[in-house]
Length: 435
Image (spheres, rainbow, N blue to C red):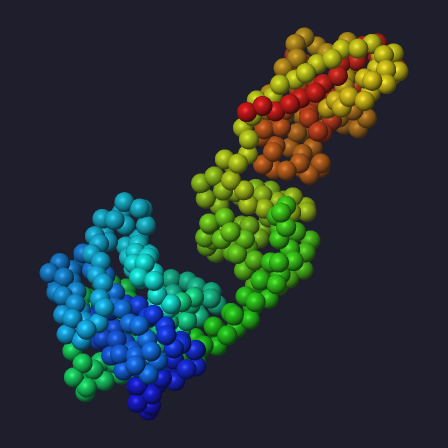
């Protein structure tokens, strides 16, 4: 078995984690993992000309014990002339205020804090055991290939030099080399899901294979490799199928489902939306069956036979319709060149209007008999047939008289008010939308 420092060195070189002159902000909690990480970085600081700063976040969860951990880290740094920065938060209360989970909130605040210290690299102490526990936990909750890829050794400017070392190796090395560290009293509490996996599930696997963590890492690495490849294909697909009109349905459906899913995830992410398996499944359905699906709050996925797009219904103008009318005799309509140069939305036989004219939006059960079609259609079927954008349907103006719908902007006029050889007066319509 490789000596742990050699293993860390190999990991750092393999993933090109450090470069001469890096300013490395090290997340240090005071536990064995983070103290070994700090010890290692200090050991290579001079040779690599590293600028090292320690960052410690006290989450306000374990009371005096947590504050004592922070003091332990501060004292160590002062004794060794290391730059140190601390942050105290009330993770539980602040997470509730933001309406997110404590773990997610704490992670966000940690990385905000780390990045505020102007690092070129952020070093965290995630190890092989953390990686195995994370993937097993995701298996229990449900995951796909990306989830099985585990914790990446390098992500953006975040590096994880201990990612190939088990927690048992780390603790043993600390004991053998006199590296002091703090012990979190909650580590043995199996009420926490990660601790349950660590103390109840991983030991059973070790009974089957004493090297379980190392061999399981091969599986994680294979998943990571495969996911990277499929993601690269998906990004090429993304560039070719995503337009300013949305995702080309014809083009994206040429690809494998695994690529389609990743394109949809990336497309949703551009709107600040995170898709789960249920969302993805429903949106994939829209590629083959045009319609609308509400993703979250005002955000909808909308598709027709050509494009699938995501839009916020707040962006759809809820407007009032104003109708400009112009009545002329049929002879003037047919012969007045100046009149014909004007653009009108539609025109109808004025004498066939029943009662008053008014404008409204569609209602359940609406129908119209389009001129020249010889049939009556529901407005819904007509919109589907004409591929009217789904998000426009509820705001598209319908012109009505006292007997029903006589025209729909950009679609058709009713057969009963059409221009015919008997028409004497023509009513011209120009509908404008006003905020």
